Length: 411
Image (cartoon, rainbow, N blue to C red):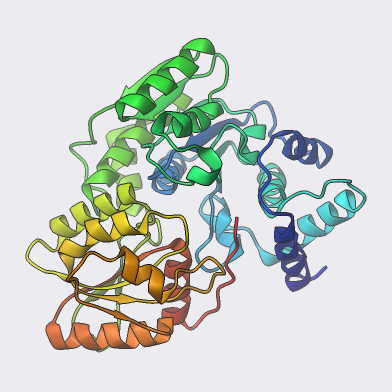
């Protein structure tokens, strides 16, 4: 298959939906010979918020130590290949096409077809093995206990802050969700966790205790270093990542840490873009749940203490949008609502019902219209433009601003 044919086939597998469970991804990894070699270390990262940033920091630190890394994250913003990187370099179209061609032939007669996410993980693990990665960093897709990434034996479990999200899949309470996230813990293997709310902490402690897994909570942010990711929460993510790097055996020193933190990037998380002939910056941030929205507001106050935002917002169903907007509204001069290119996009009626009363707002028919009006208002009022909500929206905005195309996925 060509790259386009391979990606078209992969995206077509979304019809099989989301299937939580480990039997099928284990079979897929086993039969494609893509489990990591015994000498390869694996760090598995779960949590509600901060997973991607923590993985990016870990990857940057490991590369600064001279380690050949494989990084698996999801979802992508613009290009599918963002999900699979070796030492900071995305998988090529040729490698993607070849691996997917081989896998398609292999699973052709399976009674239960692998899902989009299971296949993507298999592509990543095949690529990491072929490229001789020494350290693999896996971000869970959703949950942890039954997430496909948990089929890969991990040497270290890392748990970022846990909050309510994906309740239809993971549970209605913090304890239930924490139990799913803590499902990545491996018997006898160490666990590093962020500071957690009591219900989540208790659940993690019980799981670690049952599995005789040494557990450490990182409760203080990193001090003494700067980081190329805005926001106080990123210093907490950095402290977690450095503790994990030390635990896995990387040779850290102050020069390595300083270099890694100064170079780390993670798109779509308070990412600043400068538009030609515009007065101020555009900021992109995927605050897709209330906990993330609180982090965004804290970062906004740190970066723009005396300014309000011209805010462009779009979200999908099931994301506690009313709570998110209640948190974001105080920093907004005006909110421009936009639909998203997703069957789960919220409607105008949804936005109106979720919005706090007396909040200045406009509901637009398209992203292009919202962007045009938002940028026009920014230039007139001299307010920074903050674009936030769904990761789907962030990807679509980045594609629009760069003249590229994006193809979102449901997994």
